Amino acid sequence: MLKTGLILVFFSIFLTVIMAGRPELQAVIEGNGLFTRQLYQALSKGKGNVFFSPISAHAVLSMAYQGSGGTTREAFTKALNVAGHQQAAEGYHDILNHLNNITGVQLLMANKIFVKEGQNFKPEFQAVTTKKFQSEVQKLNFEKSAESAKIINDWVEDKTQNKIKDLIEPGSLDASTRLVLVNAIYFKGTWANKFEVADTKLEKFYLNDVDSIDVNMMNKRAKFFYKEDPELDAKVLELPYTNPDVSLVIILPNKRNGIGELEKKLSGTDLTRITENMHKPEVILKLPKFKIETSIDLVDPLTQIGLGEIFTEKANFSNILDSPDQLYVSKAIQKAFIEVNEEGTEAAAATGLYFDLASLILDEENAEFLADHPFVILLRSTITIVDHERQAKITADGLPLFLGRISRPSE
Image (cartoon, rainbow, N blue to C red):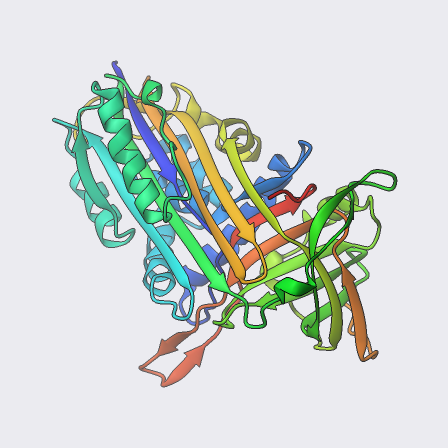
């Protein structure tokens, strides 16, 4: 049987959604939280900075999940940590609705499917991706690889305010490509309590116990939500944006060379609840400015978490196209960007899959949070959902939008 091609692309940022009373949404939040930890553990095995959008990857994989069958569908169910493809679709319907209506910050998440001219979707796949994932559809002639890549990349740049460029290389598209699934997410937020530019100074950042580099270190003394976490042997600080439902959480190991130990412990930590049991003392805060761009080949990390089958000829995506063509994922990529400065944070990410043919609360009033050595960042947003029938405002755990390790701040 002829092997055909499909591409999945994701864009993402850090987000937190809160929910109770809507089981599908809660299930997707919890599933994404576990997926985030598993994918981070796979990505963090290398050295240097790590930055990615777990929600972007999880969303695009969830779209591909809708068109899978057999053992491939079973692999998606396990890796995405949800009960079934319908649960994933319903959960993302709520996530997209509420994510795109957050006020006070710029936050956008969008999906789009680029399909080869002459190909048609099965009605069920088209209905679920259009209605639940709010995906647009555009037909392209992938044999004109440069032209098709430009169309896809232009859409990506537009959705990420020109921060993610050249996601798709022209050479990755050809006559065997049938489908490209894209998720884009962009965030820009201003701190609720800005840093003063005049207080930023050149200071040392310790790469380990011995080596250090000079970085632009922002300084602030103010009240922040904070805690000492003895189980993680780390301090946790939350920096809110002008919309308090969105924040940047920083997890700082107590030891200068403690990032490795911290990451091992985080593999068993529920990141959606990382800000529980915090108090709000006056904190002496030092945080480096940084700008980081990453490009990640996700084939190996996704294989490590149980999705290896989707990259082989054993893959079953028989519920996508109304044709006998057999699809498999040939590539999975994500590009991500983040900048943190005195004003706030800007972040974006893009991920692509290509389918081809064949705590402890302290009593003290003051605390120090000196981020002068490697640390973990989590960009999250809490979305409040109003249940009009019950006349209740429902709040749930946080959904990670961006996650990363800052080993070496750079600008």
